[in-house]
Image 1 (cartoon, rainbow, N blue to C red):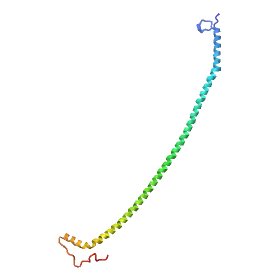
Image 2: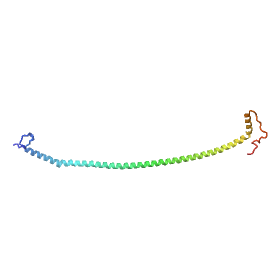
Image 3: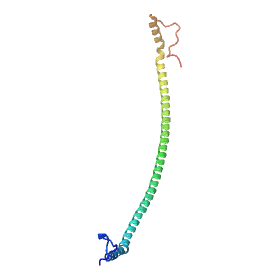
Image 4: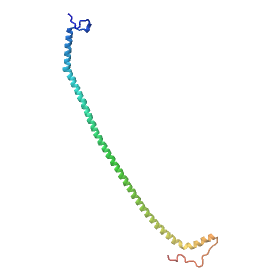
Length: 168
């Protein structure tokens, strides 16, 4: 006797009771194998994977935090270096201004000394030239007057004494 679950002829869609029992027992064995053996292993692997993923994320966050700290130190050091460079530039600028002022003052002092020395030399040479040319002034004046008038001019009768005879 072929016992069927549904009393109609549905072909292979209407299984018999022994086939249902064998199918149910097979399903229960496979379900038990999956739930007791495979699913715990799969869950364990998934948990390990999740832990590794979370661990990697935590490590990444730690590395980001460390990188941010290092960057902050770097930016702080860079700001300090810029400050020191600005201070050094300012000091160099001030020293340059002081050196220029000192050089200018030294140059002015040398200039004044050269001018004073030159004035002394010019005065001495002028006095020497005047002393050399003084005896010839009267003669040169008469000669120039004669050239201007176009006829020779003689010396006046009461002419002053020559410069060589005069006392300064």
